Length: 75
Image (tube, rainbow, N blue to C red; front, side, top):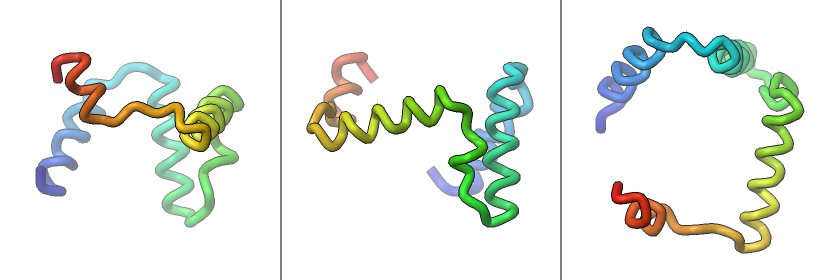
């Protein structure tokens, strides 16, 4: 998929988005990118903990290949 097509897909999705926490999260990423700062500190504790848990899982080899997940869920 081309970059313009991805952008349009995201714009369409964003226009219909009503979940306030998701909107605020996306805005914090946008602001951090615009300022050139790392957005880690903008994330809530739950998001940070989830990312750290995922990184530990990767380091420990507790991963499933993307292709295997797609097969499992018929994607």
